[in-house]
Amino acid sequence: MVDLTKLRQTAKEVISREDVRELIGYRPGTYGFRARPAFVMGLDEVEQLMFTPACVNNLASYIVLEEKLPVKRGEEPDLRKVAVMVKGCDSRALVQQMEEKAYDRDRILVLGIPCRGVVDMAKVEARFPNILELGEIGLEGDKFVLSFNGNKEEVAKEELVADKCLRCRYPTPLVYDQLLDAEVERFADDDYADIEELGKRSAEDKWTYWEEKFSRCIRCFSCRNVCPMCYCEDCVLGRLQPQWMRRSVDISENTAYHIARAYHLAGRCIQCGECQRVCPVDIPLMELNRKFYKDVEELYDYEPGTNVENPPLLSTFKVEDREDFIM
Amino acid sequence: MAEKTDSDFEPNIVAFLCNWCSYAGADLAGTSRISYPSNVRVIRVMCSGRVNPLFVMNALQEGADGVLISGCHPGDCHYMHGNYYARRRFNLMRNFLEYLGVEPDRVRMSWVSASEGAKWKEVIEEVVGGIKEIGPMDQFRRRHLNW
Image 1 (cartoon, rainbow over the protein chains, first blue to last red):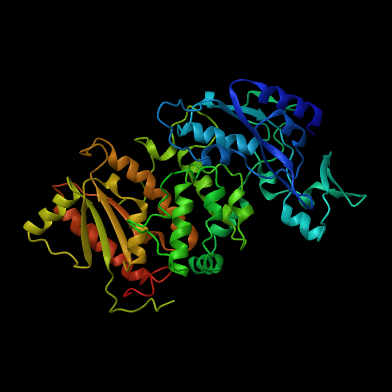
Image 2 (cartoon, chains in turn green, red):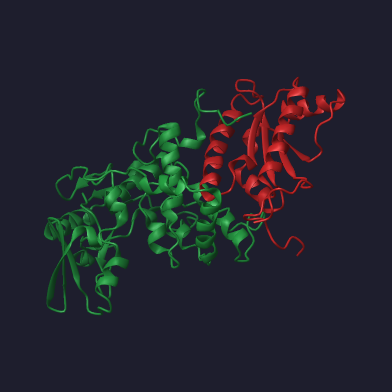
């Protein structure tokens, strides 16, 4: 577990630096076990910072989502660094953004948090419903310790941990300036068993499965908005000229939306699972993203978000790429 | 699902042909009076690397039963390596469509050079034959085409 005093001490040192504009971290939410992002601008706000297994958000999104207002005449642009707290999975988003030259490495200051797994809030709330007071979640060995209303309950890790953590390959951040805790060894791996199982079904079975999922979509665009890789200023999903998908919510437009969204993350998705977490109608979006992740790894031996020096997958080629599907 | 054994079914195929090889190859097939199935609607693009996967998706939505992307042979691209990029893109696209339960052979790719009028005929016959076997595209076609 991350030591809170050390975390806040580090945050104090970071935010007092001349060349740091703000620090993005986590703070307690307003009810239940929830945590929410904190945007710390000054020393007085440092004391609210924390890190627990409830800190599920991927803060890398906020670096690219920040609106860049035009600089007024005669003024200098604010080039100070943004400090950000990242878990292992979130750090891969930073790597992938830098791989795509979204910003330079010296524009950010990374406080890495080696992570042993975060909770799935849906599972927590299913098990402990209607908790209005602020509770706390800790991780002790193989158990989550939940304290609320003066009670203390221990739950086995497998019961509440987020699915993505059971497949996590990089628990320790891949890029950081300072590490807030001891490094964590890789404790899980991804064998794509569920993707392969789904891929083996008949075409009609697969389409029935996805038709049901896609027809639930209300196109709220949450999955796009939360995604750390979806930071184009002009997104094709919302463009009117040409209008790739119409606004009516029917199976044709919804399928088009999900194909376009998933395809734009081919070779870019870093498996942070935020899209599926925020989906209000529980579409298994990670099953789409992981299909591409698996294909990209198998066909092109490429893993997104692992090396800043790698060129982005679809803007490179090898002469010996597979072409057995070509007539 | 619509019946798949309809022998009267005439598929619509949208073909994206690169200006320098495949379009000239199709032209050669025409000037050499080689007859090939008329199900194909040709759209000329400057390079197979110009074809956005969204074009393919939109064609399938708007009533195409199959899409063919055709470019120069590897190494012959007028723009050096546009066809290599296209190859990566559509390999992923095909695998993904298969995963969703859309037959991957609705999206085909071929290399046809400017001198291969006869190969163009073979390619088209194979694509049309394949789509006739698969049947009409009915997974995510737009239902209201006239609004």
